[in-house]
Image 1 (tube, one colour):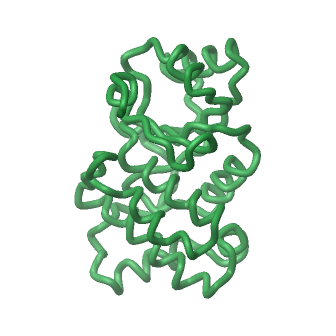
Image 2 (cartoon, rainbow, N blue to C red):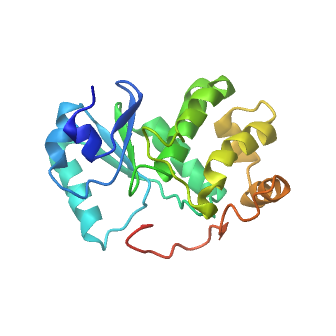
Image 3 (tube, one colour):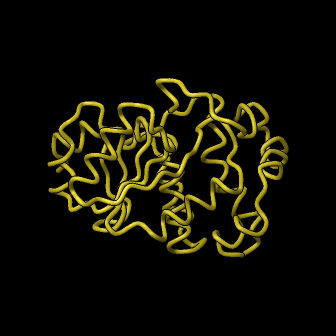
Length: 206
């Protein structure tokens, strides 16, 4: 049975005791929540924002509790660069367990990162479980038009990798231009807004 805290923060285990997912702790009071679940690291998918109050509070809380804080920026509407995905894989590999994946609402970027984590962890045979991370319920993933690439990216990766491990494919072969061409060819030319360049922050995206 899910607790009030689980519902408040859209918290779920991706792999019980190892990896979890949640939204930004807008309501505050998250310290006890993390302690009770034994979280040892936060992978922040909103990127480094050291001029914003939420990032200052989050990193201060993590530091005070001995929780590692790793920034790995994603954009829910723009196709990621290779460096962005390399950083995400590095975060998976270096974060103490159990770790928490979080973005703004814990719905879109978090679903994407959780799906890639399962494939990175267990190989392409984890595809079905990875796609489940994009479920409307319980994860509240209701993608807008230009966020439809997020789930489709998993199929693109599996096809383009040709059996290579996810991390190897990202490091050696992945390009956002290749993702764009695949999406366009599969009827998703309007399923993303652009290839990522420089973030434009907003209260909702960043």
